[in-house]
Length: 196
Image: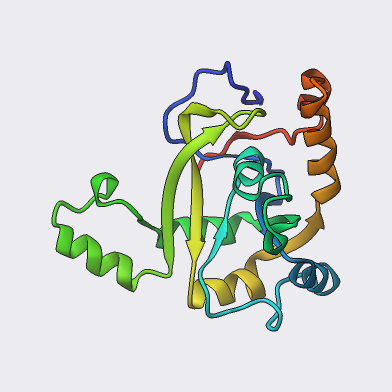
């Protein structure tokens, strides 16, 4: 399959992710305490992870780098975790999702959309994808917010593996800052269009 780069013509809204036959990878950034616990347990456990707050998962590595400032922006996002989910779990997440913006939602009535989003445990948002320099790209990447039962299912049913990729993120960022863009790109995960 083809790897997506800044020069690849793509639809404005497609899910692009690293995946295998068994799992699809999403990213999250957390504090040392949450990351250490998740790596030791193989999932997120409370405490220190909060089951009562919305948690956002992102299949785009570079969007995660943008959001977390390469793991340097905030001590609460200093550890970047690659979370491998079962395909079944990821598809269940998508099936439950309601778009965060009424402008792109499938229902015409705004009151109906507000009611659906308030009742849904999964919120889907599309944000501009980023390149390796953190510039906006002309297509969007999916972010998925989980709350209530979706967080419980995420932690107890759908997570297959968690890996700390903070060092990889730091290595890529160091290469970018040094102007070694080709070397930096070689370290990026291969993200392909994910068909649902």
